[in-house]
Length: 285
Image (cartoon, rainbow, N blue to C red):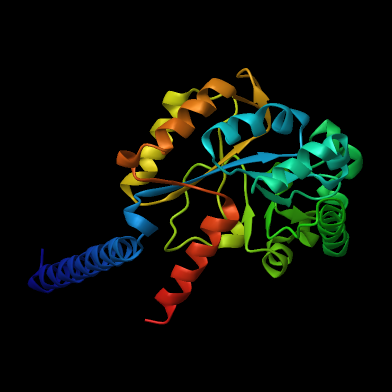
């Protein structure tokens, strides 16, 4: 090998080494920034983690079984109701309001992808943004008419956040951001980082057909990074598909109420307001 080629190879080696060093340094800086942001966020009263219990669709078991359980421990849940289902147990939903639970918006007609047979004739693929806005606004108006409360948070039906097809697909997260403090997803794989999360696009963690041991594990994992777990359930009863087990739910509440665990258990609206305030104050620093 000529001296010139050896020199070129050595120069290239130094160049790539420098690039690698810069990349590693940037990665460390980003990690440190993330750690600093996490450390800068503090839950109130020394709490280590936030937890919200949410239930979708205004299913009858939520008022028939859930309200007595929550009243026993004095805890509050968030009910993301389909407005068309509220009248099936209107007295129960009025009780939920009177006892301080959050009544939130889960649409009027629960549109999902037409790949689900139940939604083939109400498919998001056939919706426009205007249609979605009408559905959401209609639900809020009906909830306010029936229960006297205006929803401030929203849960995406099926956790899906689009309308349309192909090149015409549009996100409807901006519609939710215009109308609500929090928009909650479903079947997500992580808890929310309160210093970073986009509240209209918050993550939801299912706890239907889940043991207390698994619920506890999810909360303790989130506590390591000071996160917010938004649990998502449907029916309340014996553990099954789309049913949160009553016994596991009671154990979760008991666990969260142990002061040593450092859990803030509250509604999506209450925790969301705190997160928004902290994020706003952080931007001003």
